[in-house]
Image (cartoon, rainbow, N blue to C red; front, side, top):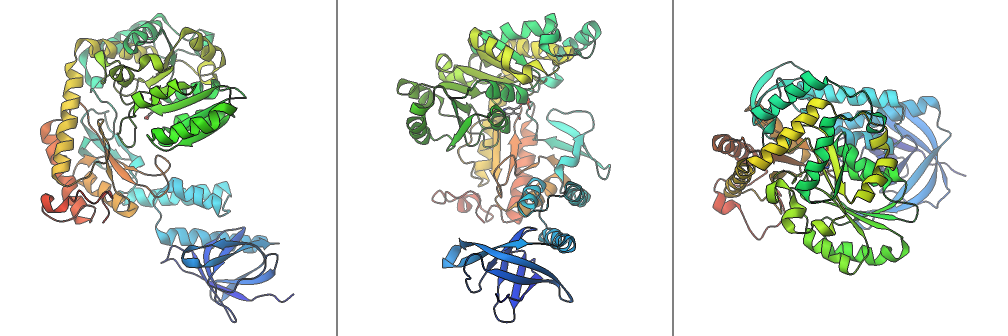
Amino acid sequence: MSLLRTHARVSVGAPSLVHVETATHAYEVANLSVGGALLTAGPILPEETEVGLEILVTPAEPIRVRGRVCRHHGLPAGQVGLGIEFIGVTADAEARITSAVLDAFRALGARVLGQVRSEMQRRGVTDVALVAEELHRMKDEQARTQLFAHDLFTEQGSNAVATIVSGATGEKRECIVWSLNLYLGLNREPRVIARAQEALARFGTGCGTSAPSGGLSSLHHQIEPEVARMVGKPAVLLFSTGYSANLGALSALPGPKDLLLIDREAHASMFDGARLSGRKWVTFRHNDVEDLTAKLAQYGPNHENVFVAVESAYSMSGDLAPLREIAALKKDFRFFLYVDEAHTFGFYGENGGGYCREQGVTDQVDFIMSTFSKATASIGGFIACEAKYRTLLQISSSAYIFQACLTPPDAAAILASLEEIRDNPSHAALLHDNNRYMRARLVQEGFDLGTSQSPVIPVFVPDLEKLYRLCANLYLEGIFSVPIVYPAVGVNEGRIRFIVNAHHTRGQIDRTVAALAGHARALGVIQGANPAQRHSPSAPQRFAP
Ligand SMILES: Cc1ncc(COP(=O)(O)O)c(C=O)c1O
């Protein structure tokens, strides 16, 4: 069998990582991994053909590998690609290919480290020490150039403003803060702080263990009936975080003959719960009742119990779920409805009882979940449901059984926040006013806010390089929010979120909108100088440059 002699050069300008040429044929390498390559723009060879490749990463020292044609890939513009699986790769060749892949990543200037990690795994760069080292190096570099927002922290906590510190440089900056979910600003409320202090003096610091081992105190026990009353459900089970409430409930509820149907934009904790359950789970299109209906019709008859899991307001898009329409599907299909109210509990519905309450669907919703880390400015989570399901979760949810309880001051802060919400509807009124005002100002400046409505205001910036630059520029002006990228949203998606709270002032909102508009225009994220000309209602695309 004759072997092809193939030369490759790393080409980092294009999305493809490597460019290949041969004496007889010219191939491009659209994709290079440690285990193989995708060759394009050359002749098609039959599957199983063995080839000898000379990958010319540095012209003087080709990497020699043998490979076998294992697949033909359909590519855009009618092209066909050749999937090559490397065989018998020597340790030396493997190390050099790995280094070529890493060099190409470096030169491509990839920013989204979670995405880089997934891509490395896909390309066979799996040596955990090597991957960690590479990501660490990239992170350091980004932090030095103000582009690694995860490195920034508040000096003394926050509310609407904070001193932000850079972990990499130690530099401090006074900022208006838009990335926190402290919707009602109760983390600075005197009553909440005083109650947490009292609890600290009386109950001490940690609980020492989980609920079944006696970790709960009388303080914790006051939370459950209070929340049950607020949301309008008979029983409530307290978890240590919102994340573990979703993880614990969705991993424990479904049995072997059951199915979870989850909105595609739901929070990671719901997907983690579904995965941990080991049961079958399927997604439906975001907020798409038609798609959900089709999936209920398709899968419902083959499963004993179906759980439909949605959020009331979506954390990344700020849009509200069509809860009435979803609940109405119960007339035609048998399913349990599970609603995550992390971004609505405390400031939607009567007395902050949540969006299910506001929409009048509480009775049709079987499980209401929320967190205490947002409107109630503490930490913890809950599931509100019928008493029998509370028992089921209590005895079967690992996150409940094996996780230490939230601390007494946290519990006291929750109770005081719930009282504050009940006694002072002005907190929620201020929040909604601010939300309306900021949205109106952004629309005036030509921003398209999509279908968002809640106090989470997303500004979509599909070009990730521009997104990182936009966040860094705003930060340098004293406006702090972080780029939202994979895995919080899909691969190659990007946005910046402005989470409004009751304590933001009109002046802070105006300053933020003006700076955002200025930088967004300069980067070509929004167009033109005159908002009236810029905003075209016939262009549904969000911020296409
Ligand atoms: C929709 C949603 N569910 C659950 C959680 C988890 O809550 P916590 O961070 O309080 O654990 C979050 C937090 O970001 C969230 O946005």
